[in-house]
Length: 446
Image 1 (tube, rainbow, N blue to C red):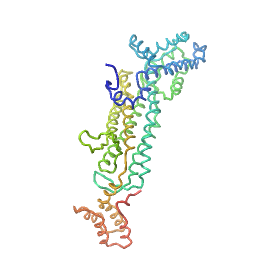
Image 2 (image 1 turned 30 degrees about the vertical axis):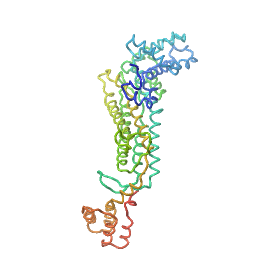
Image 3 (image 1 turned 90 degrees about the vertical axis):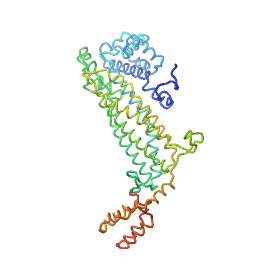
Image 4 (image 1 turned 180 degrees about the vertical axis):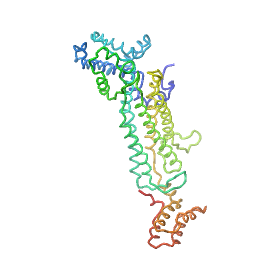
């Protein structure tokens, strides 16, 4: 059976393939091979720049032609690497042999043994994967997340003066403003993005067991530690040192954990908006061709927020596993990280699906001010906090207990009952006047 969007096992490459397609440039098997080739080529060029004595006569004018090996790489080129891998049964060694074949074509094979010189496969993998993650985050994920964040900021500003009944424990509570509640999500996201911006993408580059043994024994006079730091830094990554054979992944785990916190905030927002829609605080713009229910023609379901919540949950599960598993490896290494590391793109894929759903869902929201105002009007009891606080200020006896007795009678509390209560208070007229202007619509704080 041919692989198509209908036959793909994963919905990421099936149902949602159109949305996740941009990630193929970073996390597909083709992308991984190209990133490996990129690191190998850039490493060879860096050796030429030292220069190693044996590379001193390499023509620097060929650097860009070397870079074209990865810059112009095609899926057909990557297939050649896979063909080599069928023989070597080693994916990174196959990359090395592929590059050497290209060196032969370019008539520079006499320098070919300095491809992958002194390295182990994890020097390539633990540089390629964080580099692909960093660039995918910058090019694809963060722009979409910022679109969602900007939409939240827009709503926060647009609705900043709209009073709304708050609900704590699901019960009516001191009023708030619609815009302020959206601003809460905004500020939470901004704080996590600030923390994310401080994180560095780590890479391991140190030979078979992390000590650059082969480099030192071959060229003991070179400061290989500084070379490794500078080379990894030139790729926009930070070199971890000392390490075992593999990156210890602690900083990568911090990145995954921060992404999970961002997702958790968006799940919280999705559930709240879902609830506001059920309370009719929001309506949704209707597409006349869409069907809400196969049985109930009237329904317009909040499917965008449900889809977002579901995909964010899957992403969080994967991020949790990545951050908890990758930093653990037996002794100087085992191979459990290798297969797990191939899934780094999956939580980003589910995150992109979720962000697209949120962007669509937020764009469909229509504020229903009539429903919001009616809910406030039904709940005059929420001004009790304001009244008892002013009475405390005036040293009125037992104000909390007095308001508690008023509002817990089991009878409805409306404007008239609050007004009557104020009139019966033994306080100066100026205080009564202060209390009369308090309404569920005006008692909204800062």
